[in-house]
Amino acid sequence: MDTSRKLELATAGLTALLMAVLVASIYIPALESRNQVAELEPISVFPDFANTPSVEVKKQQFFDYLQDYIIAENEHILEVREELRPYVDIINSGVGLSPRERTWVLELAEEYRVDSSELGDREIVNILWRRVDKVPVSLALAQAANESAWGTSRFTLEGNNLFGQWCYEEGCGIVPARRPEGATHEVKRFESVQNGVRAYLLNINSHPSYQDLRELRQRLRREDRQLDSLLLATGLSRYSQRRYNYVDEVQNIIIQNNLRERDLI
Image (cartoon, rainbow, N blue to C red; front, side):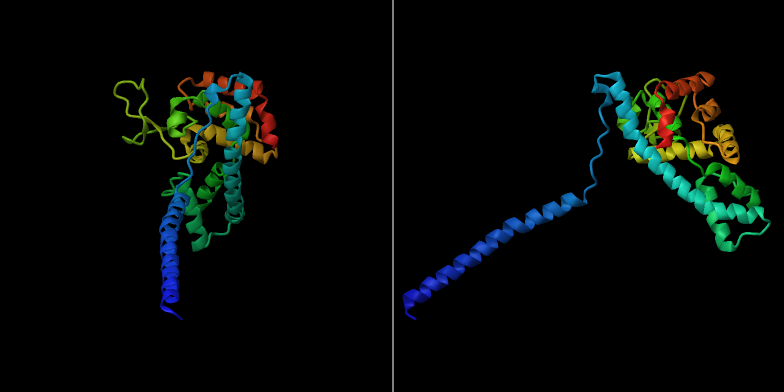
């Protein structure tokens, strides 16, 4: 092979090598960038219900949006309830719990804020059976509409809090603009709508203020009747300072918007 041919081949090889380096310098950073983007949490944007021109359309969009979150969390609660069912049967038959079973029950009691320190296993299990249960979709939707001004309140948009839930540690949420002097509560901030719905259901199922609601729900269960949101709403008189006026408001939202039809979904 003559010298000119060798030089031609060497030049071509060097050019190919330089092109490979150039492609790699562009492709690899781009690939890393895509991987970094993929690892980021998805951005959750709460729908802009305030700019929906039709009131009726806004209401239906609000209900449709929130309903799936409530159904999903209720389904999870019912799954736990089914896990609890055999423990109820065991304890009420007079048989004691095994150490493993008791550990599971006590963990659930802690989650549902049952003070088990001075209670026997039978009392703990029966309290849990009253607490670990779903809240009708219609009732949750009506409360959310009332508390969040149909998804347009500051606390909903800034804190994913559709149910007006309070917290009492400084920095735990959003300070209300018209909080009375000397008051320390804040409106709790949640990372997502799902977390806010989950906290609301746990609040209804565990706070002493809603014991009447839970007892009504248990009575309906014993009578093998559908959970009636209008009846259960009477157990919410302590949810708001408006007391029984608040109950009336929630019941009216349920009736006026035919929300009980959504309990059948």
